[in-house]
Length: 245
Image 1 (cartoon, rainbow, N blue to C red):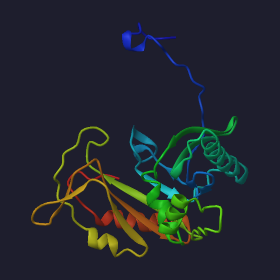
Image 2: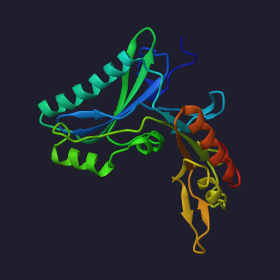
Image 3: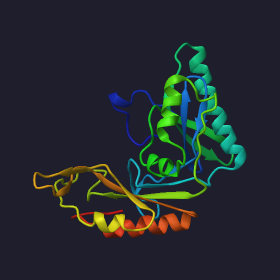
């Protein structure tokens, strides 16, 4: 039942099947024929702790995701390969990084929600740090069509987590130009690295904020708990007016 009368912009209403369950992001290198999937990741959209606040572009992520069963992961990989194979048959081979966004519904199974032709953010910040082989080799294999002919892509047997530090007001309006401090201390945390998103340098070389999502603190450890501890330890070192994570 609709509360009120639809306006002109909503003359047409789309009713879709509701999906429940965790999300999973699955990225794959593609050379136009083969899709070689990376470890699954899961990002977190809500702005605040406890799954509260507005939806964002992603406030953090971890990999490999444990949300999917082995059977569900195999099904998602099959969907990625099917898409690449179908595009080749249509004469439109896809070459590059294919991003698949999945829902893992306990009743309906694996559902593909979206494709993106890019690395995900912040998923890339936890997937690529786990890459043990050379990223250039994988990209070159995509470009020359060599993924299925001996290109070896290896990932570390470890976990990665990233925490996004955002500006006050994000994902709504926010102020820019806030001085950022503590990056050196954050980088001293074992296993930690910093990815810049909404930052800029002033003429005097001071680092300031220039976006909603400002930096992401990523850490790699043998287990997920260790990666989370290190990522949050790095995040607590960084400060700017209005920061939240």
